[in-house]
Image 1 (tube, one colour):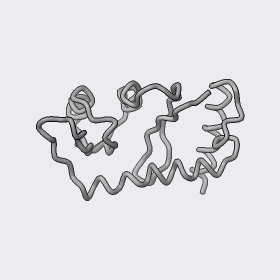
Image 2 (cartoon, rainbow, N blue to C red):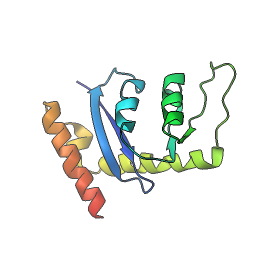
Image 3 (cartoon, one colour):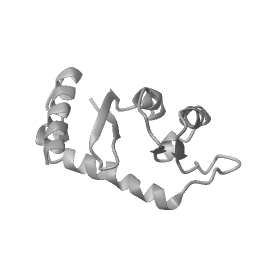
Image 4 (cartoon, rainbow, N blue to C red):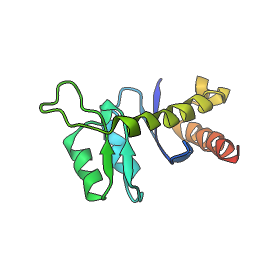
Length: 128
């Protein structure tokens, strides 16, 4: 039993929204839902989120898509490499989540209980 945590964070790496999916689900399945109704000036994401539909949705929102292209994309779409380095803030958030043993080891069998523990851990991260 595996679970993926998909999240949106602010510029400080604090969580704003979560979606849980099965471990085998692709990242692109939740990207549109995560960005819905979120005012933003830019979206920084990794190569897994490189698709035309998501890029178009970000552009319609008036934001910049800072997403590196997959190697298979022809032609490659350039991205701002300096701004992309800020993506480590979300990685730091996931590292902070791993300090909560209940999250790191996934003790909860039900997704609703795991999501509740995730919200509690995130609230504690916000209070730091």
